[in-house]
Image (cartoon, rainbow, N blue to C red; front, side, top):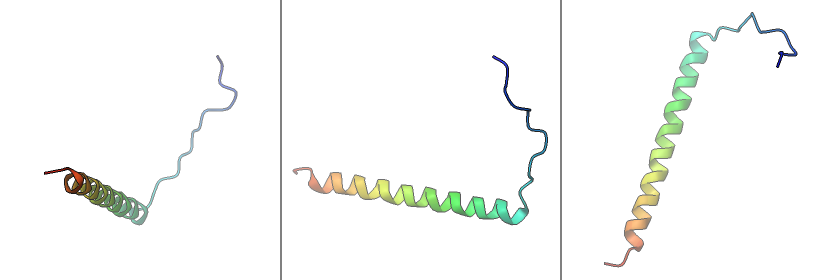
Amino acid sequence: MREYRNTPSQFAEPTRDEIRARSRRNIAIAVGLLLFMGLVAASIVMRSPA
């Protein structure tokens, strides 16, 4: 099937500050997910009968 639009030829280059901001955001998301996974694991261990 033929593409109905022209293929993109010009792309925006991110600045160094934008790349740093993305890296910080990705690290913050990863830390948040790890903390959430730890909370879920801890709650599973606490609820299991001993």
